Length: 362
Image (tube, rainbow, N blue to C red; front, side):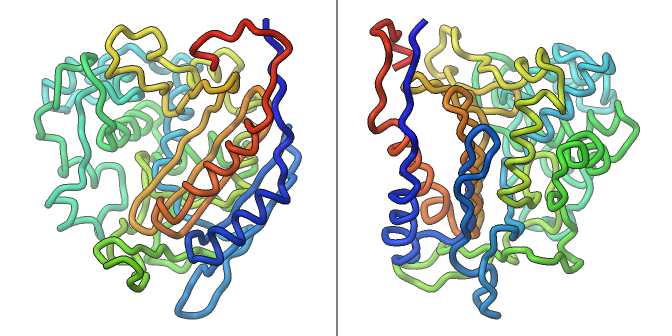
């Protein structure tokens, strides 16, 4: 087996890039954390949490996670499976018998987790009319529940927020708890994630960043806040809040098998498409986790984006690094530049003690 040698990330270069190339040109606002083997090496905040009141971002500021929440939903499902309360290959009608027949009898939990169910997105006209009223898992169902499937389940791949809402409903049905309580009890509390939740934004939440977007404005136009674009309360598909320190706590707990056993952690985080013979379905995605193999490294985690929201948690399993980036800017002015620079520095002087790398490992 080849012994891959990774560069020690030059954090001085990393910091200079963020400050000189991104922040100085208003291309990043948020918080960045780098750790190795759980030890924090870099933790800084940049930009403003609230431009109107002149409140700066801090390393403990809570940012919107976007779809990063999908990892928490997936781990919750896996916990129920580990305890024998559901089976991943079951059809979802076993747990939600009142669903339309096509969904209930054709779609499996596995397919929802991997975005292969044929369910779609719910950002439609119904969503636009109701997004300020969406607070419970059930509130989302009228947005999509009668829509036809996009394809025969298991035959293709389409990223689906609707599918993760259904997973949230399965968690409620099986556990007997509301989704938010179950995730809090199963993940946030055991992982010591004290500043993470799907907050009800009708009530004041301390130290919360306001999102800013340039969506719909000309280049160089003013930033608009996303207050009237986003749901009042996030849910199983995304939209909760967290800090970079809490994301590191999640990483540490996951890697140490504190949330799931080693077997079930591996099952959740392993790519389900690696040997798929359909090129359009080689997605490098497990159960709510991406699973990317590059340059001999294996990276698991998830990202998220929405107008005024960008978030990333990358767990570098071979080198031991963690990169958590949370931003209250659009994704192209948020996580993207920070993420790409980190990977550039990690892989810049990479060598190996052998020459037997496969094409996929390269």
